[in-house]
Image 1 (cartoon, rainbow, N blue to C red):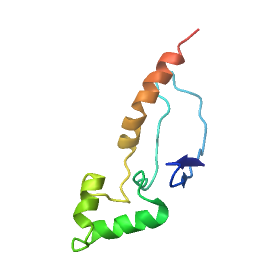
Image 2: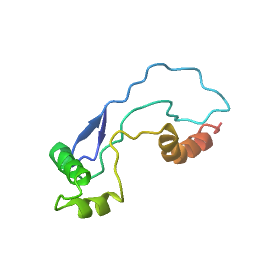
Image 3: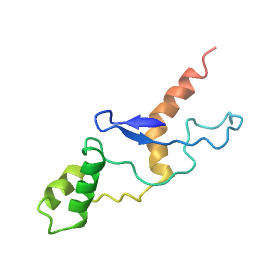
Length: 103
């Protein structure tokens, strides 16, 4: 269980299905699969997220433009890419590579 945005208390389930021996040429941590995009930070918990999505999906909604600006454009809750997650993990991968080579 991973708690994200402590004010809103989003809880995400991270499933480790198998632990393999490390590949010396590999970069860790590494995401190999997943689904769904996490909610934006500070959106107001579950009720706020539903309100946000309602406003984004309805161009006639009074808050549509404000919410679109707030999230920085379109927000597709079904979007997920392994490449995006691994791009975000890259700083941790670099740190891990440096620290794991210590004697």
